[in-house]
Image (cartoon, rainbow over all chains, first blue to last red; front, side, top):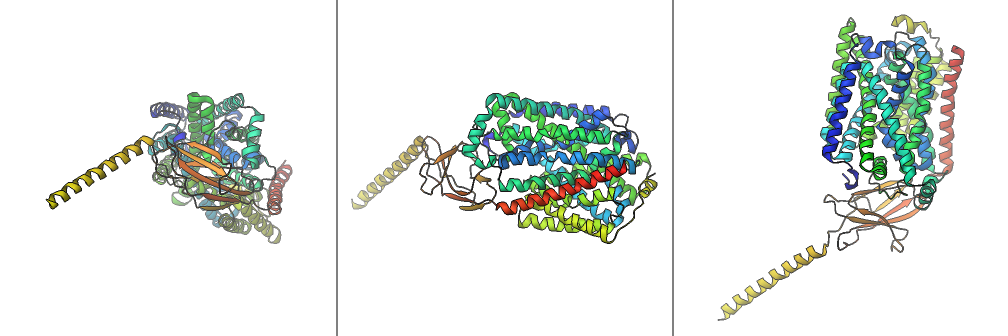
Length: 475
Length: 154
């Protein structure tokens, strides 16, 4: 651990951690009190209004990656890096019309797995489950691990304790309150995160002018201002496609499309996209100011907290502690809920116990949430610091699912063979590019290969899918 | 007598040697002469991204000084960092060769470490723009499928 990374005394860190934990567990339990059946637990009764819907979409998409990785992108890739990260908002923009379509096609649907199984059959469904569970677990583990490392770096709280408490808090309120609790806590968390980022942005501007930042960058890190920065140009569409793949396939977003009240989904995702779009730019700007503020950066992912603590002192360190906890919790709870619903619906109900009652399914979802938390905790415990790489490793997998999903939703002639070939060939070539060239191109290669497969089969061996099969089997 | 004299000489030598060691240790502690700091990176690095992490061993949180220069001889070096960390993030580097060295920086500066040479050669722009255009086409195609589908639906 680096000496410059600790900003708060461990006692203050523990105090904040306990207070925040108690608040989230209490709120989650309170909001989840009307949660009796599986549909209420998994989909909040399919009746979430526009305000909560927009807030939960924003909060879920603001992960620790947004608050930590966006500054890292800016530090490593400059202006292009900031813009590249903000392109992840296109995932939300494009999912807006898809959410409307999903709700119309599958008014009684539960998961993204349901859609793939009904649209493309069991083989494609098996591959999809494998990919999405790998991605979800990798994201969950990397998030919990990031939590432990960041809380340790911010306040000196031992990694094992910080990571365990963060996971435990999220598991408790997600088990108790299901999606009600997740959406409710997301609302508060999104307000805290947005307020924190705005305050920090203005504080940085008060300490150092844009001209000073520009002069410093031009002298010391000239490529960060260069419009022809090669690796940064390559990252733009790779990151955009990674974001599309994440949103389009993952049950986090599909469960929200099912949970939002009819007519709300499209507006909610659009609003969320517009709220989210400037956040990576604001967070990235903080990193660009690091040189002008004479902040030495011991590792790229610590640039955000270091600059904030430098500008705002202890108050800033407290703020960044709370913002980091909120951004981690808002993503971990969503992942726990969505992944447990996917396992409960797609594996427990569809394979293990088809006759399960609604109460039994709710119980199963709670147990799966607990088990997911336990598995994540066991993987995180040895503190293997390379799991962020595993998340990038998932890039080719999520990139390969973009075309099967969108054509499955909109093209009658999209075929099961195209989807299977797209997912397998896309991820294989993407992984090859990942190892041969680098992470910054893997998702793009995967998406291109998958697109070619899907289009080839759709035009050479067209299907004629009856959309009613989605409704009939779900009803 | 001879044996006695030899014993006395040995005793004198032992005392002298002990004194020398004590004085040396005392001088070391007074001057704060520190052990050499060692980079954990390879001595010669090639890079095509313009960013990388420099690491060095520093479990004892010894204050260090890190320098960068454009020449191996370290004419006109720039001090990048003074502090107790064990790593430093380099970024925004243009094409070129950079040299790095580090030393402990207590009351008395330590000796400089071995030099790390970093050669930065960014990807060719032709290849980069080709990938950019490919990415743009995939993205526009995705958007087209969705908006066309949504329009047909409504």
